[in-house]
Image 1: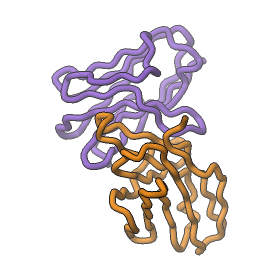
Image 2: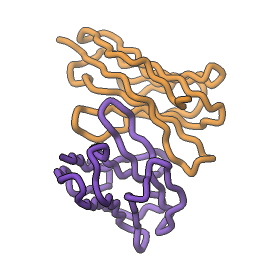
Image 3: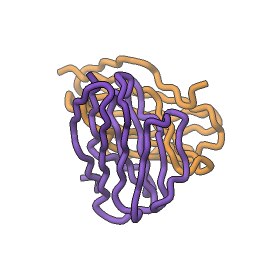
Image 4: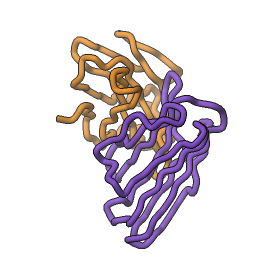
Length: 112
Length: 110
């Protein structure tokens, strides 16, 4: 059973819209949750992380965590064409020596 | 700049050849991870070092793979007798409160 699931996409939104990316995880012991952005052919780039229930905002990005539902999301407001990339959700479990478990990623396209 | 340098950035090799990748943290970090990412997938854990000690290896790391971290600084990942299925991006990551990845090494086995 996969540990981290993401909506497969691809997701396509117009410029200026809100893009919503979703992720569920299976292990209730998961402690921290990360969102990475990955442009084609490049390595993942950390956008933000969250470890407490609720919302965390950073500029145009908002991460939302609901541990009871084992659900984490990323909202991108005022989407720009430069946001077009694959977004990876990752989960951290201290019991596994700090390694990250990744979803397959959701490909986002923002069209002008 | 994530504080991690990986070399080479790209490697094309013939099946059956050996290849070695290197990961250089710019500053000292106790924990260093190797991941592999194939097309359309998220990164998958390969192995983990705490200083120079290799503490965990994934089942993905067959006996053709070996990793080292002498002196607890840079790390190398070697693949012997490469196979086409080894074609992937190999990522090195440092763990602080969040994991930062190097630029990766793209391996193509032909």
